[in-house]
Image (cartoon, rainbow, N blue to C red; front, side):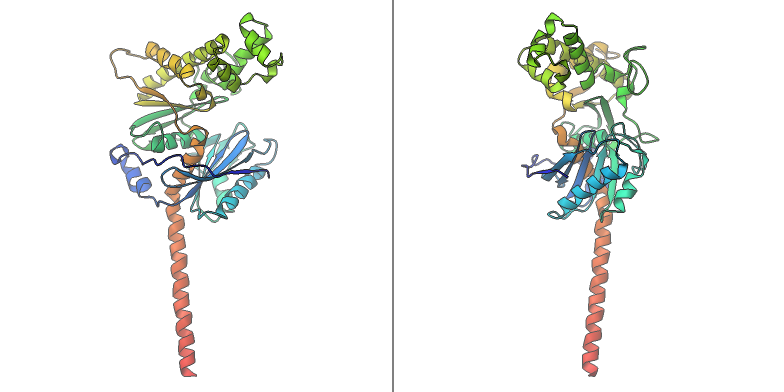
Length: 383
């Protein structure tokens, strides 16, 4: 397995949100969880990233490897996770492992019901890994993990009601209220990307038409750019020249880079994506009424080229505009490490079990050692 180790500087000294923003359940559990290092795993369609994270959200060490091909068995991915955790455990005192998986995770946070980029179908990931690792394991959706990290250490600190939207290949999301992730009855809340915004619109891989992610995602951005280039549109000459006529080489990061350099078509495409983003956020505000929207994922790297048009469209489409408070819309702060940091921090909730078991194990050993010593002393005295 090819990996690289990156001893990074800490994300920064970040404190947990003040107590008033935390619900009673989390006040009893998370803020009293042991301040011990845990491992976070972020599993995506192309990479598996693992890192040791302390209680303040600082990354102590990070590893990365490619995700095994989705045609391979789930055990291959599990083997990769175990190898990364054991590698990190050689150098760190790991107390729990948290996994952020790109897929639907059940309400018990054990099974991955469906992962679009991996061969996981109703896979009992937590139980399988807990049986192979000597520490407790927690599994959650990757967007939930990223939202938790932003609430604890990033752009959402101090917010009581937060919605995170992750713009990547598609659109993911998560909801936090009073310091708790809202997962829904079956664990699959937050699949915002498949809200229908254009009846009969573009076909989505989910099987429906007109889903939000077909108009405001990395895939949508690249699709529009390639269509203009394939049509030999005069506005696309800049990007056609940039890829030497190889239209298949057009990527989202490339479009963002050209937009920053002033390419008019790329700027316009990001504005279009941003406007659709604002429409979807306005719909979510009508349904959920949060105080803050945090925009993450790879497409958010465009920053104000994307989020500026989104704010404008949000204000135009917000129900009751002018007569209600408006939610704050901000870019995520933790970048691609958010899912890993959030998974590790959530894992501290189950680290207590490991510490208690360890303590009982040590106490049993000490009792046995005292008993053995007393037996030796008595046998020597009788001799």
